[in-house]
Image 1: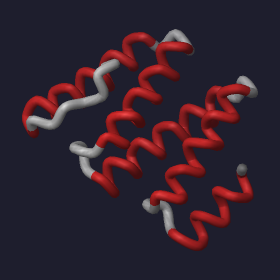
Image 2 (image 1 turned 180 degrees about the horizontal axis):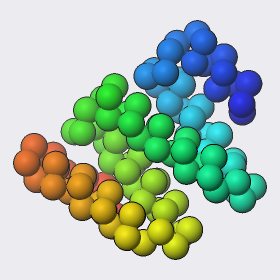
Image 3 (image 1 turned 30 degrees about the horizontal axis):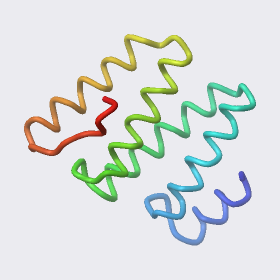
Image 4 (image 1 turned 90 degrees about the vertical axis):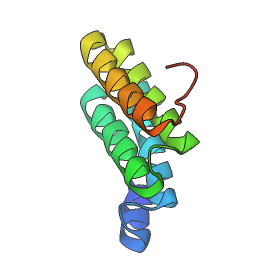
Length: 103
């Protein structure tokens, strides 16, 4: 997965659907392997890239928010998860864009 991510970044750039998908996939693998610090960094990069590429109104961004919040909660980072969730809910309310129903 690291090689796929590196090739995707080199070929398409950091903010491209292929690269963002590779970021998520590697983050999920690292999470499963217990490499939380690196997994968290990649989940955050994926979310930032999705927001930049797609804007807050896209369902993929909503899923990315959910993935990061779920990861943080599973690692006991409750306050940080709530802060991120609250931040995006406030933006969604201002832009009248619905977020993922799980949030």
